[in-house]
Amino acid sequence: MTPLVRIEDLTVAFPLGRSLLGTPPMLKAVKNVTLDIPKGSFVGLVGESGSGKTTLGRAILRAAPISAGRITYDDGTNHFDIGQMTAKAERAFRAEAQLIFQDPYAALSPRMTVRDIIAEPLEVLGLTHSRAETDARVRDIAAKCRINLEHLRRYPHAFSGGQRQRISIARTLAAGPKFVVADECVAALDVSIQADILNLLKQLQRDLDLTFLFISHDLSVVAHVCDYLAVMYLGEIVEEGPTRAIFANPQHDYTRTLLAAIPSLDPDQRSRVVRN
Amino acid sequence: MTLLDVDNLTIRFKTDEGLITAVEDVSFHIAPGEVLGLVGESGSGKSVTAKALMQLNGRNTVYDPASRITLHGDRDIDVLGLRRERDMTPIRGGEISMIFQEPMASFAPALTVGAQMVEQLRIHTDLSKKAARDLSIEMLDRVGITEPQRRIDQYVFEYSGGMRQRAMIAMALSTRPRLLIADEPTTALDVTIQRQVLDLMRDLTAEFGMSILFITHDLGVIAQIADRVAVLYLGRIMEMGPVRDVLRTPAHAYTRGLLNALPDLDNLDAPLTPIPGDIPSPLERPSGCVFHPRNPELAPGSRYERDVPPLTEVRPGHVAALFPEDAA
Image 1 (cartoon, rainbow over the protein chains, first blue to last red):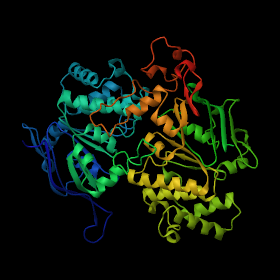
Image 2 (image 1 turned 45 degrees about the vertical axis):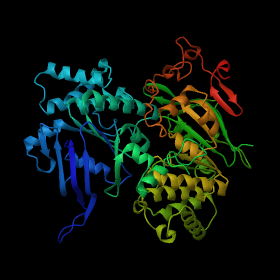
Image 3 (image 1 turned 120 degrees about the horizontal axis):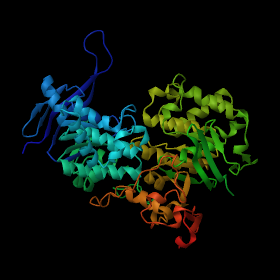
Image 4 (image 1 turned 60 degrees about the vertical axis):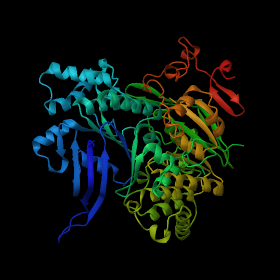
């Protein structure tokens, strides 16, 4: 079976400043990465700051330049070559693949009602043809994201972090994407709320038949929601495999260091994963 | 003998929407050389409490008249009684130092790290410029910054994230404070760097004999650094006691809820259990026990909806906001 997203030998490089003569030096944020994301999977991408995980996620959504290599998206009916899309193809791709942002405080316009925030992608992409149709889609996705429908008329400032993230997720899913990149989407939330959002994402994945690329620095969160894991370090994937296998038996030194650094809840143990 | 006593601390803020309660009737102490963890989610009042120790809260802050903060020493300091800016010098970088989550915000960008370290030593000690510089280099070395003689003359933007945090710790400790307030000092760091910073802080407490008030939302970090822990929710202490006791046998439903909400790495199949509901807005402060609307263990009509439970001892030195009949 072909994967939904296939990344082949991808390099993303950014110029470091400008040079008067010749080409400026380039910073390779992602180096020769190859990764398959199967349909219906929940793939975790972990790494520390500067590892290139966000850049990789952005490249798939065509928000970072592809310097070398190829990214393809194929759901059986639609086929996109991310680096070579026409304007028309790009529009179609925008409805297929979407991003959930990290900070639900910055992601929602304070001047729009919750209803308008969720409706905006439908209107921009021209997916609905009447206000009644838009309203119906908004109410449907809001209910799936467990948003109180009475709240649709309110403005975001009235809501807590957890409620805002549910609104942000509803907006992401409004256009009916099949592939979602979630970049640190629980990092800004309180512990007691985090679990609720993670459970919601898993539920939505099953109900809406979604495929997730879940980017996070938090290994304990990733361990719980992702079935497959790729560990990035300095722009490269140093280890990948089923989550369980990686936690049980990490192969790469960097993965081991990362796992050993998760602080244990037991004051007499240093690490939560690696016993020492 | 304690180093710091906080008694009946109640902090409110004047806002356009009325008086908001941020901290309510909070009392705790810190012994010399002890690390007290203050753990809580947004709105728990943990940072407001820390800032009160240095009188750093804004002009719209109202301290309840019964609130007392006392720093013991040769001469006791009544922190909330200090009125003039110059009287506050000892609690702002002298006897008490503070480190923050974002080290970039703690250093001035246009001065070298050394210039800032020397300046604060000149304010808080009577060291000469030369001696202050030597001590600063020694402190940078002590926190593991390589080539401190060269690094001291660099600007903070030339440092990596972990180095900035180390430099901030070096600066905070160079005046040999008796109390260090650390407000989420490792939250913005990668886990591998967090581990190094926690180890460093542990070593330095032992070496300098200072006390730490360590503020974080992360129970794993608390387990690794604290001797005792106080769990705050909406400005009230829900539970407080020795860290092993509280984490292994939590007495309050909120502490249990926080622990259960964390992903369990020993059992990846276990479902994640959120605490029901959301943290209420500060304008809608619940009556009785502030946690009662989210407490799944309470029956409707429970006494916790009306009355504020006292901090009751559940084991020696371990208290929880429970009525005595529930503390058995």
